[in-house]
Image 1 (cartoon, rainbow, N blue to C red):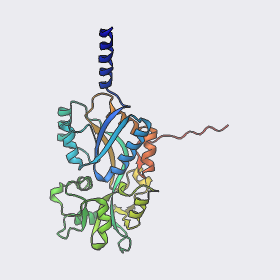
Image 2 (cartoon, rainbow, N blue to C red):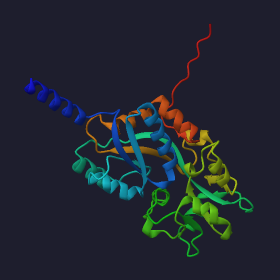
Image 3 (cartoon, rainbow, N blue to C red):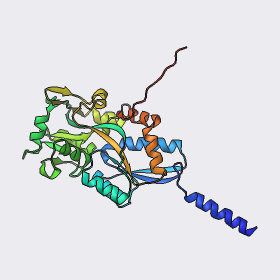
Length: 282
């Protein structure tokens, strides 16, 4: 009898340690620029699976990627394209095929105070401004996702560009009126929630400049994100080092399903996976 009880106890203990997508704890590393959508997806997952606890921690995406390689994190959010060397490092150290789980179209936007006479910006202005001694563009950090993406778009290394810094995208919006000759560079998800009070307050303090590319003006309207016509549209994706179907992969699957994509849309971003809505008429 004692032997049987011992076997049952061991079996239960092993079951507790078995991989599971619907119970356990996990931390997601994300750049501040897309923290909002990441938190919304995490909240949705925990509502659907009450035995899970997901913590969202902000970290510059380059540092988050290094943590993933060192197995100090199970899942991260990325926006920039990895280099061939980085993909090789990922596949060798993680021992998995590089398969980014794309889930949303976000954008890097250029903002000025509401009362600024400036109402547009061209790709040429951006290219020249990023080389100028006057450093007209303000970023949220020296290795932020926004700077990484803009430098990648301009086919430059961040170290070769000139820019000003105010730590934190929200701080850029709050302090931009002190620097009337500067242009803030932030992530759209910073204030993209349509009905969120804080997002609305931040939006009311600045205006987003349409970007002129090849003679055409592009805004961050959903259609321009969906078609990627807005020049600084970026695709957010998850990357994990989890080889089995545990919490990280469960969360990724949820985020890419229709329910997760509805959350992305409620965040004011463009869902990556489009689902057809079928209505039956009787």
